[in-house]
View 1 (cartoon, helix red, strand yellow):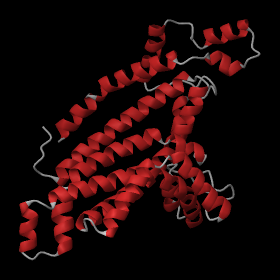
View 2 (tube, one colour):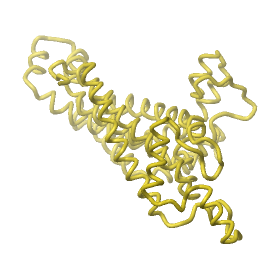
View 3 (spheres, helix red, strand yellow):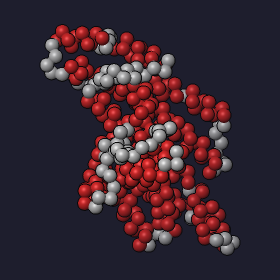
Length: 334
């Protein structure tokens, strides 16, 4: 196991290099001038040229890429062209918000999706099966931006139940330890902050969970139906084992590998693709940060953020592979 983990971590090196080349190249192919974005339309050509020299934008492509990778190798993500602040500190302040939103959304998606898939498989062709699978199809087809706006209109504007944006109300004080507000409120025993942070998290979390919840439900149902046709399930039923024991101990455990794969992939996708949700709900995460950086041609921010998300994505897949061995001892990580 240890050797496998070490090999997978070493394999991160070519992944990082490949992602860095693609991200660096794509950003330099995007039309626009970072100097013009910073100084505005009224800047003179002399001012623009001076800023380009200061930011090394006139250097050849290979030189710029070498400088970028040289800083990455030393753990320096560089400074933002727009704000002049350290990219590492800016990402560090926003990444916990995205992680908290993603974890919350995936928890909802896994719990509801797996339960709905199991019940739909056990009660195949029942009203619950038809309703849940129709709901899953509806969830996959639902545009996040429309769903988010409708949730804000209903729960914030009409019913005034939930706050429409942000992570915490202005009048709530919270001592920040991990920058995961729910975790920090528990660590500091701040019940008021926990309730307020949960209320802010509920709508964007539900909106973001819609698509992975639907995918997990459909995958769980499909995998459960296949496993429940196997001989060992019929044998377990014939021996008189309790129905719940057969379903959750025998069937679900053997049907979990495809579901684990989907969960791992969806977690990675949500972590890097929560842009619309963060924008609609004004959630101060990495997604909005990258969009703003792309619009202002802030090369170091975009390139560094893409690298970090790629690394997290690979680590999530590594954890998924390790979990395979816990659910199916027949799998060996050679």
